[in-house]
Image (tube, rainbow, N blue to C red):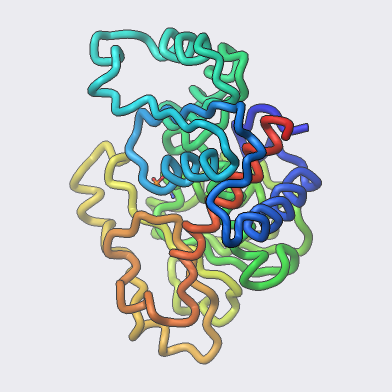
Length: 304
Ligand code: CP
């Protein structure tokens, strides 16, 4: 049984496989319908204290497609956080209204866990600062499975801001649960994956590179990430590093063997729009897949 989802490390391989299979079932069951009516008595609240388009909306659509009511906390500007209400009291209040699940995004690593300790309702971590984003990683795994047909025996390039990217840590932990996967972390030294993340890997083979062109033809997936301006303390460093890698059609067409291109989005200029029509571009599919994965997750968490 899946309860709180705080870290990708908390889910075992069987649970991940269950969610991936269930997501495909949700997609098939929803085909041609607007609602499955399997959660008509349930209430899901999305509490997003940091900006989001995909995660917030895909959870709201997922809840609605299941038949649940989706309530949104709204922006911090219209909440009593503006008056100084603490994070803990905010979660206590939200939980007191008895939702069936709380989907939480906020900027402090570890506060999703704190919320789960306070709350009786299950808490789903929808991103806690630069720490983790486990439901994005489930979405990524589902996308890889649909596009390539397996989540084993793959070589995946994770490229961009690996230091601040929460999708990178969670996806690494997900890939680690499966067999014979290799990750190539592609980033300038300043933005390389942290030792804290790689120290938690048990099974995943990995190497680091500061160049993408030398490894392109080894990759099954190139997973591009945004340089996360909001996480930099020094804006000058952001300005220096922001153009480190740019993936565009001209670059990709240099290679005979091309990986599929994924990106958790939003993108800025690291992934050009002239890639969008290439057959390898899978990032908008990836974003849409998030709805089915989150339907599956909500279904499991709410014991439906
Ligand atoms: N991938 C992702 O988390 O996007 P949002 O920030 O728009 O939710």
